[in-house]
Length: 346
Ligand SMILES: *Cc1c(COP(=O)(O)O)cnc(C)c1O
Image 1 (cartoon, rainbow, N blue to C red):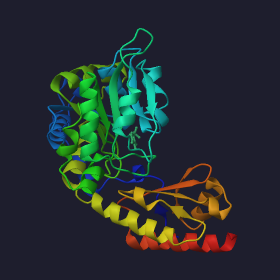
Image 2 (image 1 turned 135 degrees about the vertical axis):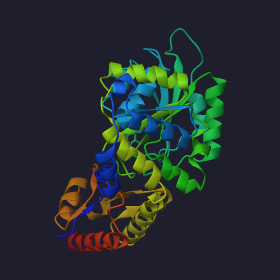
Image 3 (image 1 turned 30 degrees about the vertical axis):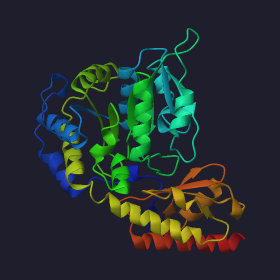
């Protein structure tokens, strides 16, 4: 039976070129600053996003946590979208470890309105936690892969600067945002002080993310990474795959936008399923199955029996994340499978 993996782009496997590069990687002790392959990845990554320096980290979660640890003092407030990954899916680390508290801004589909952000940032007052960091997620995961455009970013930057705040971008999928906007990624990252992006998602590296910013910021983040136990020794074997990811896998991400659109268009024709086509911008398709009278988990289990795997956003949401292992034909097969299921339950 064919298997169509749409639960996440984290399921992507390393390419043969990555495995070869990992095999051949020249390595050393990176905690001592002696791994040439890690250094090469960090330099390449910094250049790619137009920042002075970059740090290779084991996960996006650690990259975001390091950003909070490095930009904030304990007791500071981080202004962020209410369903952002840092708040929703990172196990409370920003409070548990970095000692910061979130101030949540609600939005439609993950893209914050500058006016709402302005209202959320309170004036300096003895009663309030000092707001020191604004966090923007681009693309927004729970929002359905939605993109914050350059004008909005620029407005958000203006607000943060006016209040003396730093800005961090959770850019786990920032290259998708750049493709959608049709701009070089540096046009996006120019509006933030630090950026985290994932090598391990659509870019298909087995492990790792990048945190980038100024030299000074990254050298403090490097020390904080050691505190978290994220100092890795011969990490060049992993960084080698990251270099291939940045050199060979960025341009093809547009293919994942095409498969996502094909899936969304097919789904939108099925009675009982609703897709908000406005949010289908990159490689994530969120849809609602309330019209089928099933729960998310019942739906996911039923289509998984036919080899099509989705993740659930309970009670009635389903999420698909396209990636290099799924084709246009796979999307048609997924749509047919769901069409049959819908016909059988209605
Ligand atoms: C996946 C993801 C992360 C975290 O990455 P991990 O490597 O899984 O820790 C952070 N932010 C967003 C938006 C993500 O999608």
